[in-house]
Amino acid sequence: MKLVEPPSCSSFSSIVFIGQNHRGQWIAQEQNGLYGGLFVSRAQAIKYALFENGQHPETIIELPREIELDMSKHPDVSQRAA
Image (tube, rainbow, N blue to C red; front, side):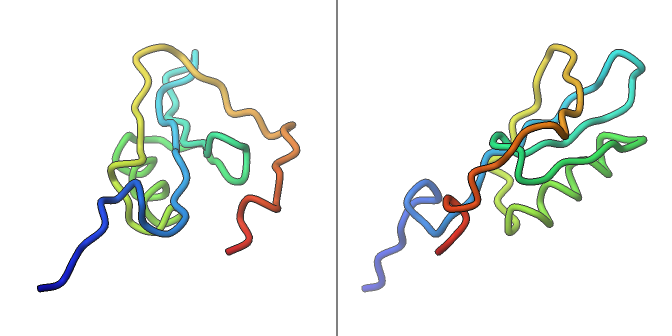
């Protein structure tokens, strides 16, 4: 019998927040600022998030409030080493 780990125990996958900014544009941004982008549709934001996080839809969180793309963060790159 093969044991399968739940998604939270698998290899590194980061949480990605998606939502709309004050102009109605869609934002996708990794929680630590490792990556992010501005998109014209929710579908494109999700597609980007899935591509960047290794196809882990369970780690994408859609926020009900406005968010803004913050590219000023200085991510801790040591977290990505695996």
